[in-house]
Length: 126
Image (cartoon, one colour):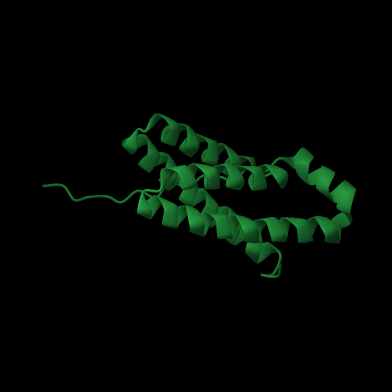
């Protein structure tokens, strides 16, 4: 009998360099870092709401939260998170439970890595 192997996929965190450059040009280094830190904090709050909505099966609120999360991620150039949120929303729209579970698990993994690394990068300040 074979054992069960737990797989933990790891994806690179994708950022839009042009968006980041535009933020730095518009707000300066300190302003851009502050903006990204605030957006990261807001994304963490939205993500905690998404977790609650998913657990409750509140898919209308879940879909609205995904749109909010995507907008925040787009605003600061976190394209991987944005694309993952769109994938979950697409699956929710068609109501495919297996696809929702798979894409939601991916978004959770990406968000955990991206938000934690960004939080560490700015020294845990908002």
